[in-house]
Amino acid sequence: MNAPFDTPKAIDAAIGAEAARHPAPDHQVAVVGLGYIGLPTAAVLASYGWNVCGVDVSEKVVETVNAGGVHIEERDLDRLVSEAIETGRLTASTTVPSAHFYMIAVPTPLTEENLPDISYVESAARAIAPRIQAGACVIVESTSPVGTTERVAQIIATLRPDLTVPVFGEQRSGDIALAYCPERVLPGKIVRELVQNDRVIGGVTPACAARAKALYSSFIEGDCLTTNARVAETVKLVENSFRDVNIAFANELSVVADDLGVDVWDVIRLANRHPRVNVLQPGPGVGGHCIAVDPWFLVSGSPKAARLIRTAREVNDFKSNYTERRIRALLDAVPDGKVALLGLAFKPDIDDFRESPALEIALSLARTRGQRIMVVEPFAKDLPNGFAGTGAQLAGLDEALEQAEIVVVLVDHTAFKHLTPEALKGKLVYDTRGMLKR
Ligand code: SAJ
Image (cartoon, rainbow, N blue to C red; front, top):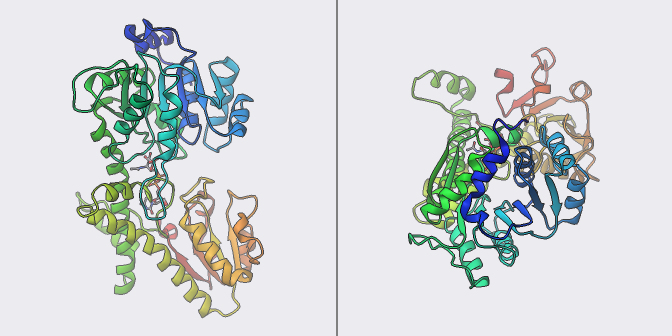
């Protein structure tokens, strides 16, 4: 990727006169957390001429990155990281350096009770606090419950009483800036979307938003829209909740259609010919680490009001149980017959199996009917560990079609799309994705 502008000038402008007056820090940008968002962001920034230090608690990750390698699979990321390391613009470390800009891109998981756990963001703030200098800007990118950026400000204020830290709702500018800017990139297209998508930048104060915008404007081709931190935090949760609620509608519709004895794919295709209707696609449930998680952050912030959002989560989780039950019924209908389960990934054409409904369903079936299960997953070299000892086997598509009496499409990978009605003749087929209809 080539920077489309005179990089040093853009960086000088982003750093700004205010920050430049303070002692020169070790790095221009420190990205804390080298995961699915942090590592691509660090590498993209480096490709635009920034001097970046990626920070991670894992020594293994730091070693891999410093050697020019990647520990996650994402299109174009390996090339971008190796180039950034080669040019010397990207380095990785287990300790936080002093920097003009700090980006926090660490996980914010859910607890067992579906409550947000922001402890990684809090420890990132504690790690940044001793190194931060006046003039610097801290930006939270992790998907977070509303109020998290203010919590980061509070932690830094407590640990650094020598600095004036801005306060939400007050106009007074501080010695440092704090902002929230959610990532909104699609796994599989992260590198491209990091640069192309519009960004929402929420400051603890308007001056903080302007300061953070200077960084993003140096490499974002989309618009950088400024607002306050709480609005930006809410926007991120709303984006993924919007998608979850709409997928829940499609998933619920698929169960209703089964009850009514109509073909859901025909219903959706025809309903979508209405100029103001756009029903999404049903599937075996919602996976990934974002859409199935983030709506709970809104529910936890407003448990009584967020009724539709909570129900959508429940509907989408129910769809996985429903899918499994339907496959079990097919297995009962063909005693001793084998089933070919097509796909384990959480969505088509990626090798990411985390939080995948297809994987959960396949694992659960394998635990009781392992000998009868053939998994076809072009993105897996071996079956994941959970299948060990179940008797389930990983098979090629042709082999599975030869042996299985039942075929279930769990993921509509491109590699499956050439499946013809002839190849499936005489078999019981359950297509959870409507792939064979499209
Ligand atoms: N899915 C359906 N039916 C559909 C669309 C999706 O069942 O019609 C399922 C997929 O199979 C998958 C899940 O939903 O299991 C999520 O897939 P996705 O492609 O919709 O989204 P993610 O999780 O890969 O990425 C989302 C994106 N958010 C939105 O589109 C609003 C991305 O832009 C975010 O950056 C990302 O979450 C994130 O990190 O938050």
